[in-house]
Image (cartoon, rainbow, N blue to C red; front, side, top):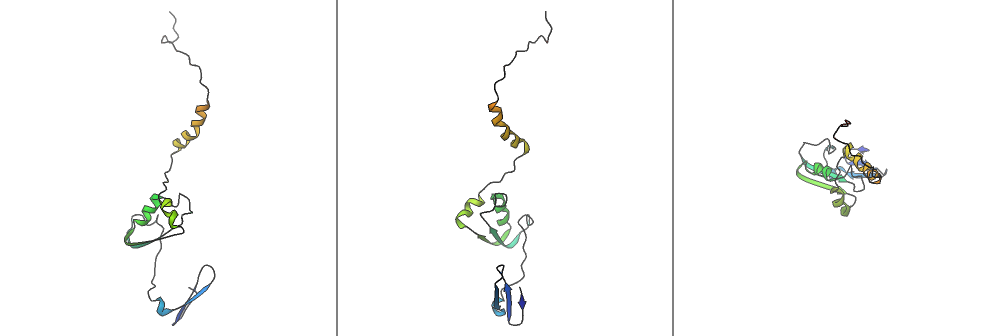
Length: 131
């Protein structure tokens, strides 16, 4: 909002372009609040607006994040996206956190397969005592 008087409002958009609108045309505009879906966990609100950029990483756009975002709405949800076709794939991605032991196992497996078989010795049950 760049300017406001009795008859008009002047808005500047991110490209730097200024838009002028009659105040009579803006009567439907009211205060609004924004929150991240992480901070809104556990909350329920009347209306939710979600922006999903399908080019973002799986850490940002995935099944769990999508559920958290849309499940906050009581009455209405509006989803904005950059690619309607890619949206289905992006919100169905699964981002599971791996524990350190799983990561180590995945990295060690190829090395185990490459290791040569070590000849085995049979240990007698006499525990080193000869009779």
